[in-house]
Image (tube, rainbow, N blue to C red; front, side, top):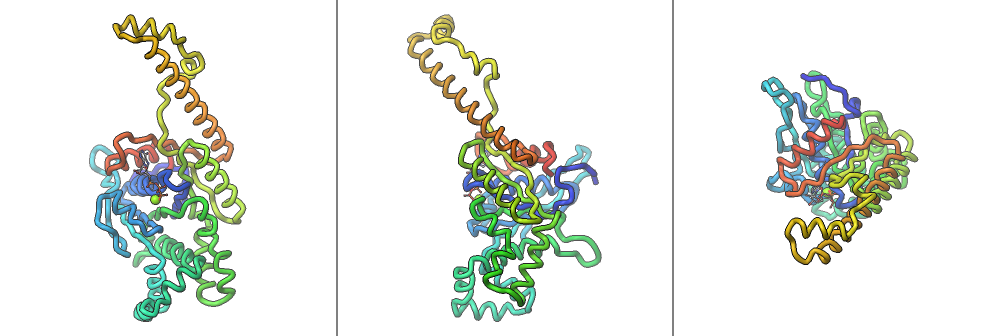
Length: 335
Ligand SMILES: Nc1ncnc2c1ncn2[C@@H]1O[C@H](COP(=O)(O)OP(=O)(O)OP(=O)(O)O)[C@@H](O)[C@H]1O
Ligand SMILES: [Mg+2]
C-alpha cells in the first residue's frame, strides 16, 4: 500500500456542499473514486433522493442499500496496486427513519406500520430537523461502522450534501433537534451524530465555479460553518475551470483592430474589417471574463482554505471524465 500525504489524512467523512448546479454530485463522485485507491473501500452517499449518482455511473436507480458501483484507480503501473472499491447509497428520510428504528430498536415492522398510517411522512415533513438527523445519522453510522475483528468497514465516506443554503442546518444536528427533543433517544442519537460531525474525522468541502453567486455562497457557507463550534471546513473545489487561452500580456495589450485586419488580409481572408472588429469584441469579452475569474479566485483564496482546480470537461461527464477529475484531486493532494 502506498503511503502518501494528503491534505485530509485524518478525515474519514467528507461532506461535499456548494451552490446548486456547481457540480457537487460530480465532485463528490470524483472524490470517492480518488479515495478508493490501494484497496480502500469508500462509500458515496447521496441525500436528495434524485438518483444523481446512479445516473452518473450509468446504473439503474440505487435501492436503499449499499451497492458497489465502481473500482478506484490503481496507482502503480506494475499492477501491484489493485485500486479500491466505491460503494454507493441513496438515502431518503423515510428509508433512514425505518433504518433508525431497525438499528436502534429492532423495529422495522413497526416502521412499516407507521408508514401505512402515514406517520413516516408526517414525521419527516413536519419535522425537517428530524429528517436531517436521520440522514446525517445514517452517514455517521456508516462512518463509524466496524468490521468484525478490527478496523472500519469503510475507509472513507463521501456525502453529497444539500446545497450551501441548507448545509449549516443540516450539519448542526444538535441545534436542529433541540426544539424537538431535549432528552430521550432522538436527542441521544443527535448527540452521537454531532460527535462525529464535529470531530476532526469530518471535513466539509465546498464546490464552486468562478462566478459571483457561487463564490459568494461559498464564502457565506464557510463563514456560517466556522460559527458552529467543532465543524472543520475543508477544501474549496473550483469546478468547471476554463484554461486561460491568452497570456496576461496578451490580455492587457490586445492587438488593434487595424493590425488584426492586416494580419487577416495577409492570411488571404476577405471582409477583414468586419472580422477584425468582431475578433476585437471577442478579445475584450474574454479579457473581462478572465479578469472576473481572477477576482473571484482571489476572494476564495482570502478564505484561507486549500483550493483545488478541476477543469471544465468539454465532452460532458462520463466514467472516464470522473476518473480524470479524481486524478486531479489526487495530484493536488485532496485525496
Ligand atoms: N468539471 C465539469 N466539466 C463539465 N461538466 C461538468 C463538470 N462538473 C459538473 N458538470 C456538469 O454540470 C452539471 C451539474 O453537475 P452536478 O449535477 O454534479 O451539480 P450539483 O451541484 O450536484 O447539482 P444539484 O444542485 O442539482 O444537485 C451536470 O450536467 C454535470 O455533468
Ligand atoms: Mg447534485
